[in-house]
Image 1: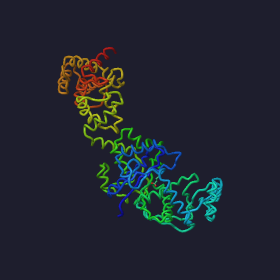
Image 2: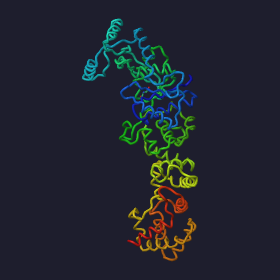
Image 3: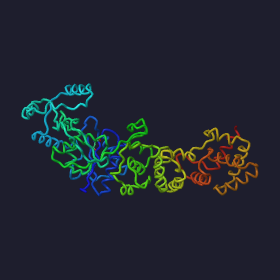
Image 4: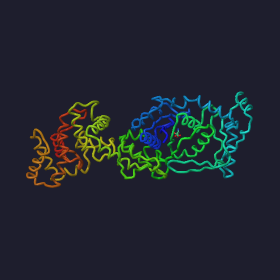
Length: 498
Ligand code: GLU
């Protein structure tokens, strides 16, 4: 195979959509697997919609996702510049050459005339195709009109009939009737190159070997292949990926939920999980495994086995994959993620001392069990930081307002008052004593105990909770953690008042 050089060519007109991120990722996997070169090219010729801010965000989001590139606007390279707005010279040079060779021509048809032609075609029920009215204008005359300031676009002269066939690495052989294509615009009347033209000049000059992109570009590929022929450049190989859709089979959009890489990163999805999920969006490994590392994906990925049918974005599956990736993190890695969230929530200070980190690392694994993303972690930690009889749920109140509930809570308060330090073994002894003293057992004993210490009726096992809450109560946090004795005292005081 020719030296692999692939590119991701986003237009900086918005946040990085997961559909585009999937394209970026497939290109990256293909490049890395073939020891090729991965290029980032910014297609910013749509001056009105392109913004530098989007480009900066895009670069950050691609990096966050774990992609790196060998050539790009921020990195340079031998084939730069890598931002289309800086590449006007080659666009103009090749367009002039095509005009001089009679392969392209100036078209003076006004937008109104073209609109009329299109409407006529629609009313006949046929596909609008540019009539080719300006094809035969003598070049010298056209050049003079342009020089005199008349508005014109440059169009490629294309065959009126015939069939164009190309091989798509995903879809196999594809054929198109040229009579339906029309002469594509290369340079607009404001001097800006069209997408189809700029992309061919860039792909050719950057020696791109494979163009991997969404299937919405298939018809553009036909126009681009005609351009390769006119320019005398060898075309790359093409692979068109199926579209990313919502479960209702419409293009994935805001209506379905989060759609940009940035949104998912803000939701606390791990980049390794989004990477893993996007790789499975329209491709799956032959052994059916779904939780895969970056290296396993580089090794196993097979572009030619990408799916031809729509890739359905399944949020539940993404969360499931995220949960699997959370499990694979070390305690330290989990603690670091949790720290960010709890700092945001105001539970933790801007920096932690050694003992606080140790506490957080011990809490990290039990507390992150079952969370979809780290944004859910605040809720889990509230059992430490928020404890108040007033905020108890009705169910929890019911538990302690029974006869046994009152007796157990009062006894627990009295006993903990006398204890210096409490751990789970000690609580087991105490609860046996309470059982003896009050005659309450089973649910009637354990439910009130749990509520007295956590103000909740379910959650972490007390064997995990007690050491963490006791240790946490010795540390100084912006929101102090109350220890077991204080908790039991507050609940006991509360029921005395009811
Ligand atoms: N700028 C184009 C887009 O974002 C690139 C398409 C292509 O890969 O050629 O759709």
